[in-house]
Amino acid sequence: MSLETGLSGKVAIVTGGARGIGRAIVETLAREGVTVNFFYKGNVEAALAVEQACQAFSGQAHAMQVDVTDPAACARAVEDVYDRCERIDVLVNNAGIVRDNLLAIMEDDEISSVLQTNLGGVFNTVRPVIPFMMSQRAGRIINLSSVAGVKGGRGQANYAASKGAVDALTRALAVELSSRRILVNAVAPGVIETEMSQQVRDLADDEVKSRILLKRYGQAQEVANAVTFLASDLATYITGQILYVDGGFKMA
Ligand code: NDP
Image 1 (cartoon, rainbow, N blue to C red):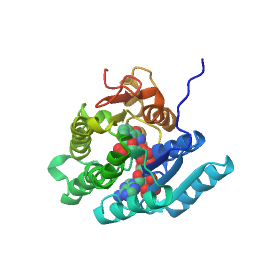
Image 2 (cartoon, rainbow, N blue to C red):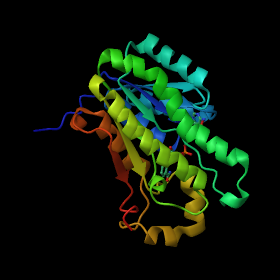
Image 3 (cartoon, rainbow, N blue to C red):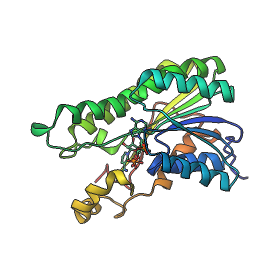
Image 4 (tube, helix red, strand yellow):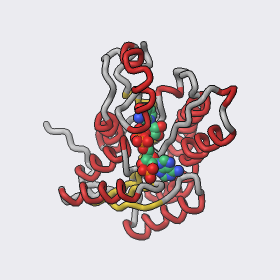
């Protein structure tokens, strides 16, 4: 028996889809036949590259410049997706930033920008998407959390707080939306080889790797695989869960 994802013909929104993990998610969903609308903040070149990469395998990916910290822009973009695609099956909240610093010397902006993007961004996209999913009586919401949400890291008070809150929001939404058959889960990566983790990998390569059970960093594709699983028909009985894709980092 072959495993069927059931994703072909579905419509998705992926935030932060132009680079890193988000790009891998966009391309993987598009390969499964999903029409993917992805938000990016400012890197137009990267966004166009993702559209072109998807066109090369006849995948449907549509880039939209939407800042997830702007609630009105998110609401407009969600309406636009619904007007064009006539449904929204999957929302992946992937956009995120880090602004690491020791808390004693952390700037106000380093706190507010991380909370507004990593946590506020999830509220800003989920709220306008929910009514559409409720009327469809089906939907999948997948939030990108982090091991940092449960495992403290030096210089990451702002980021850890934002991701711990994303975990809590994921569980609360799973409860609230279950009666409408909307499943809400999070994927929590460990250290993945993207631009975001470059500084940490440069500063403490051996030390970080020694704390990962599998003794290597993860790849964006390995996270995208978990997101795709949770979006698919292979995950019809999973909600309110945090799936760690971390090579055992959380356990070490
Ligand atoms: P990257 O820094 O490589 O990419 C981040 C993406 O988010 C970019 O496409 C960027 O857009 C987008 N983005 C940032 N701010 C906004 C905003 N305000 N509005 C819209 N888009 C925005 O990050 P990763 O791919 O590494 O991370 C993806 C997710 O995974 C994040 O939520 C992160 O916290 C989480 N994660 C990553 C880990 C890692 O080791 N890499 C570990 C644990 C969790 P643009 O291209 O326009 O700048």
